[in-house]
Image (cartoon, rainbow, N blue to C red):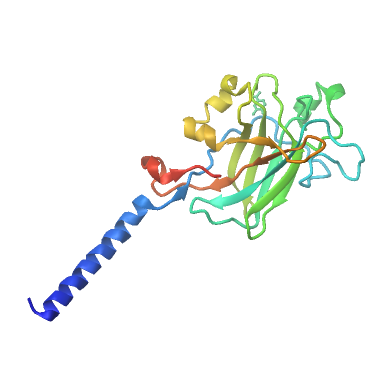
Length: 232
Ligand SMILES: O=C(O)c1ccc(O)c(O)c1
């Protein structure tokens, strides 16, 4: 075996190795699981509140906060390859502590129960890190919906790219909630569930919840479970 032959054989092997790595990269690449889409439900606000900021606890410059367990909901908007998505608009809406939505079909019949200090809807636009934050309340059950949940919608460039819901890990009503159960398999339910944990040192019992919105589909989608991992 002469020198050049050996050299070219090594080159060929290196080339083949490179091609093999390239072609298998798709199988072994690490993609985030896309957030499952879930129903918008009947109560996306039909009349937007004047205050649509990311603090749902205080309306305008009111001094009276909403009733409920104050929750700092934070997270990121990401692509399935883990890139932060900037200029994404995250909208959330949920019923108040008395289970009344900011929607005339709901509040009309429950006016006296409505918490007038709960904003019911909020918006946040992401910057380059894809991060968002809201101050809201821990969601409570709604008649017929035993699992408390926060509705969410993500828009990019004005286009709706995801409508989903955020559920509370360990909530007693989860197992009885038809919409939670229909989210998909156990992984899908995991992907729409967040821990609501006490904020260390908070004297008023605030909670923190972290939830990433992962937009899109993995190239291999549902075929290679080993390549899918849950958002943190
Ligand atoms: O179908 C319903 O009645 C219903 C009620 C409340 C919700 O938040 C929802 O998503 C659906």
